[in-house]
Length: 204
Image (cartoon, rainbow, N blue to C red; front, side, top):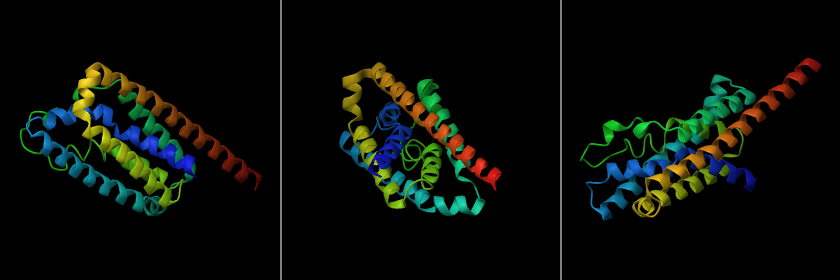
């Protein structure tokens, strides 16, 4: 079980993409004193955590309500993760958040909590994972991913100084590559699950 928790935590951590979000956080918070920046980051991360946990708790009920099969969940999850991974490897300028990069006001919820942490990909992933692991294990995985992401974002000024923009970009592309492999594995598992259930239906 712990191996599965670690695997899900790694996947969620990659989807939260703290390395890729570091430059955006730095630009959005540039007009705020350093000590206040840490308070804002923690506040926004806690808001994002609450949203992600809510989606994890209602995920099973939502999927049962719309009657989606396990193979469909895994296949769609693999496709979603793959598309996100491709964007990490081949990012667009500013990640579509250009409108937030020129404001001098203190951010609240948008964009630091949503969509940079609790984005559509993370929320979709926790709903998918809620079908694959007990809720207690999923919550542990979410907290591990959240804690690691929060630590990186709190250290973002030092990371930028140490790695530079090119270093951050290289790490993000590496994370995208790892997420690609996770996505392909999920997709193949979905195909195997569908094939197995189809054989059982044919047999009966």
